[in-house]
Image (cartoon, rainbow, N blue to C red; front, side, top):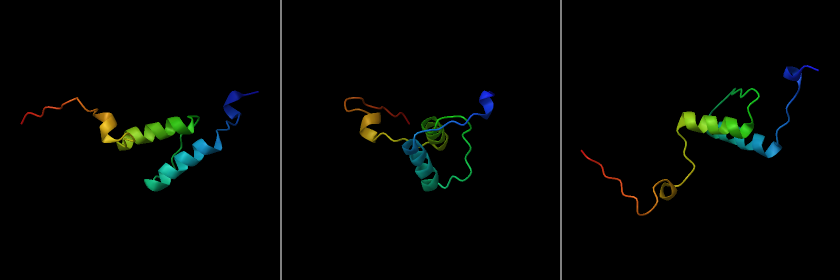
Length: 69
């Protein structure tokens, strides 16, 4: 049996999350190949600069950022 012709079945919930993200961001025709839906979602988020974590989690209290101008 040729593995390249085998069908991969991903959990429906993961597919729905990816589809929802694509609809929200106007992405049409994205082909993630054999990549899992969650890996594809992560790739798209990184390419679009989408960050899920709130600002407080990205810059915890106590950490100060010094900007020099």
